[in-house]
Length: 224
Image (cartoon, helix red, strand yellow):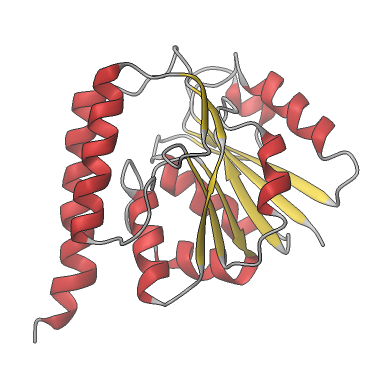
């Protein structure tokens, strides 16, 4: 069984080499391919990319492009900083599901380097709002470590319309509407202190995405 690993990357030339080395070492006995998608970087990231384009389109768009090119039976996307270590994949491969997602918020999850209290609060509050509006029984929609069966990934990402902060929400909401089997798995996670995420600004953008997704998937299709 072949595995495709998709790494969306924006200005990641300082971190991508280490991540690629760790992934290649772990997967040396796997039939696999690694697809680095350069999402309009302005540094040297394109030198390590399989797919590259000039305009920054968002993480969701980058993964969508990676999925289009993926040939594996299973498709994993992982963050360029390897915040959830590739070794966590071992647990995922034991689970028979359409989508297996990493979670930082289950009792067995291990947070080895924590976010600030503000980020934790915003993340937890955001997941409550997400759960209320569009996704049920998932504690962490935003962890950047998700595994899909090939046919499932191709279907879901072909329909994706949210390309930035809320793309995970749309993918999982669509999967639930299609009654696909989703399993949430506790993972080890290390917060990157050099992250470019700005908690309040990006939370507001995610909220905007969430409202659009809620309207698109639950309201607009009912309007005659």
